[in-house]
Each structure stands twice: as structure tokens, then as C-alpha cells.
Amino acid sequence: MFEFLMKGGFLMWPILLCSVISVTIILERLYKLHRARIKIPNILSRVKNFLKEGKADEALKLCESVNDPVAHILAIVIRIRKRSIEEQEKMISRAGSRIIRQLEKNLSGLAIIGNITPLLGLLGTVTGMIKAFIKIQELGGRVDASVLAGGIWEALITTAAGLSVAIPTLVAYHYFESKVDNIGARMKDGAGELLEIEHA
Image (cartoon, rainbow, N blue to C red; front, side):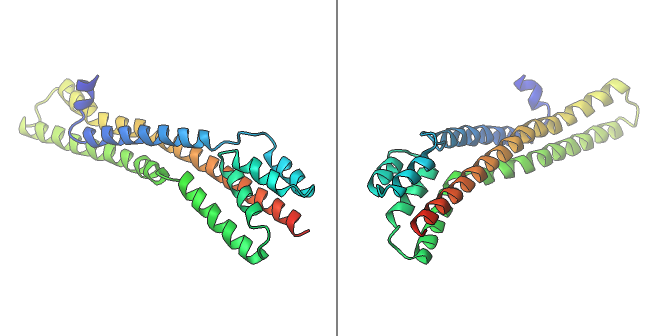
């Protein structure tokens, strides 16, 4: 299989490198986002109930016992509840942006790989076709169909390889983006609901 892929030429090496980097990022992000999921069901409603009952310390303890972005934002809202609304909004916004940046870490790498690997594959095909036609010219045009077909399929290997890397990479990128957007929306909604309770 490896020898077959190497028939695609030297541009197979950067495509293979991109595939290794892509798999590494995907596995790392899957692990991080798995850890970022909500560990306690209905944590927001439980925190809201504590606050309505005047049990802010218990609400904070609950949030701090859970390692996920939504609970982290809720804990910040509870800690700064005595500050002015303007200060609260700024601090929550900064904390939220920091968390989102952590969740989006390396996703730009997936986007780059998803965009450049088809181009690398196309470049490999073009250079392979150029070599095939140079050989035909050297033979004075006296070449049978099998020789021509062999040169063409070898040239097309890089395009197939580039697309094989790009398609799952872009699928993973958009999946992770949607997950991060969902977490961001939950953080924003949770913080907003707690602020409404504090300033009701």
C-alpha cells in the first residue's frame, strides 16, 4: 500500500504529513471537548434554585465541583455578584472569550489542512501529467494506450490522497466548530439567567 501511494510522487509526503497532523488534532480536540461536556444534569436550574433560596455558597461549591465551561462561567457570575452590572458583563465577557479560545485551539490547523491538501493533490496530478506528456514527446508520440494510462493513474493518486485527507478533516472541523458554538451559547444563556436573578 505504501509503495502504491509513493507512486504519486514527492507531493505525497506533505499530504501524508497533513494526514498525521489532522488525526492528531482531531483526537486531541475529541478528548478536550469530551471533558468539557456537562457532568451534572440540569446544573443551571440547580444553581438558580440555590441563588433564589439565598444559598450562594452552596451554588458556588456546586459549580466548582464540576470541570466544564458552563459551570466555570456560572462560578464567575456568583463570585462577582456584588459588583456593578457593567463590571460583571466585562469580566464575564473576558472569561467567556478565554474559554472559547481554549476550546477552539488548533481548529485553525484543521481548516488549513482541509483547504491545502486538495490543492497539494491537484498540484501533484498536474506535475505527474506534465511528466507523462514529456515522456510521450520523448518517444515521438509513438506510445501505446497502456503506457499513457499508467502515467495518468499515477498522477491522479495525489488528487485522490488529497481529497481523502481533506474531506474527513473538514467534516471534523465543522463538527468541532458547532460543538464550540453550542458551548458558547450555553455559557452566554447561563450567565444571562444568573444575572437576571441577581438584579431582579
